[in-house]
Amino acid sequence: MQYLIAAVIGAAAGFAAAWLTLGSGSDAPPPAALEILSTAEQDALNLPFAEGVRVGDVLYLSGQIGARPGALELVPGGVQAETRQALQNIAAVLERHGSDLQHVVKCSVFLKDMADWPAMNEVYVEVFAGHRPARSAFGASGLALDGQVEIECLALVK
Image (cartoon, rainbow, N blue to C red):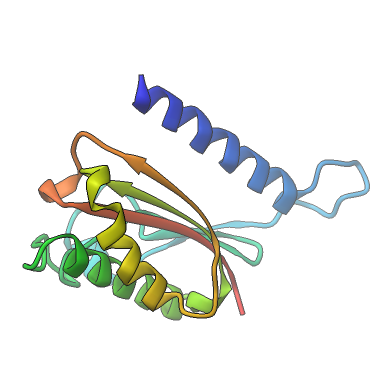
């Protein structure tokens, strides 16, 4: 049931963001082109998704776990180390595509164990010092590579 609720919330948020980005009225300009964002490093991992999508000046990033760049291996050290690495991965994707952490509008955080929320939040608040994007947090019964945390975000291009 929690997956269904999360999927419905995610779909509704995506629809709303696309509606706001693409426009809803007949006087709206033509829809912005959808650009798939990827790199050779990402492609080499043979994952079934892009690192993100750009529509107009909005970047929709795929979730990032605490994996080392270019590898399917989690950093050691638990939820705080994984949170730090996931946010570093997000920062790198944003930089590659014309944005940065200060332009993040919304994050969704998925935790294997909601009891890790305070530990994750310590790192999150440190990384987003002075900038507080909107955020949701969800408990999940399992994450890729048996990770402790996954974070996805929406950001504006600079």
